[in-house]
Length: 348
Image 1 (cartoon, rainbow, N blue to C red):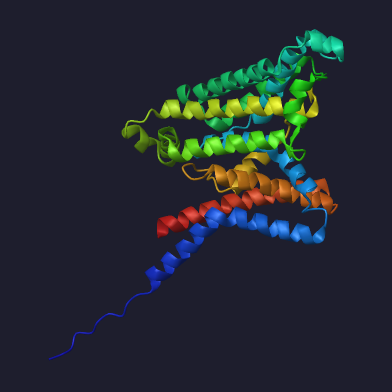
Image 2 (image 1 turned 90 degrees about the vertical axis):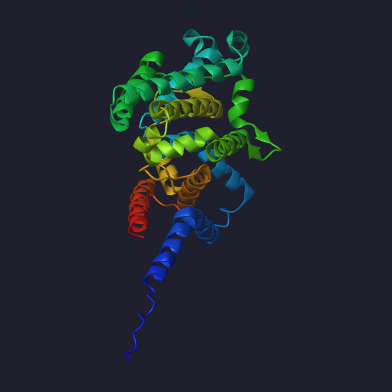
């Protein structure tokens, strides 16, 4: 009787599974690993890098980018994009400044006269946030109801809001706010921790809870992962898509208020180039430009990573031109890795 040969076990599936495991780990924690490596390298190159003063300085510098990046995370999770955030930031900041000063006619008034004319800081903050919410709703509605791609709508918004900011303030700045307004951008808790950093981290924690533990957060991921399947399952895809641009507008208004308080000034050219840094923070943090994948934790890590990178390069006297080249290359590499990881998961 002839023995039936038994096939040898194949190891390829095991190897593919191990490859996917390493790929998953790196896609989740790659930014954090890179951040730790950068801190070690810059700490050795410059003794001043790891001092508490410099660390809090880095966090303070990235706090505005971080607030915008939280909103951008919601947008990109739905496979959208918002290129108007810098311009909207400028517009919201000027509105907050005008409310705080009691009108444009008092834009340069300082001292006791300025305080007598000014409105409370919370009215200025609410005005900035209200402008952001309305702008976000308009852009979200244009995307969902007019079926115009997010890239086109927000590219137009970038020009519209910048022009509106220039028109609103006649191209000039508004400066010299009351101490209660400035406190939100310049004060430090315990003598070390800047208030903008606390605002950024508090918003990040709240956004993390919303995305991870609420029904709305699951809807955002579902719409970004497969909008047609989400629609067939009963989700209001149009409402969810519009809402993420409203959230983005909220963070533009909040960020504008904090930035104006930090600088004690608001101007129409504020926020120029913020789009690149914010999108880079979100993408480097692991949020996929194709939607459906990402986290607030990753966005926070990506934001801090860019701040650490720029700060370390500055401490080592690297040209600002080279810094921009490095950020651009990192964005391309992050998106390339995301595309590669998705293709490997499909093959597996």
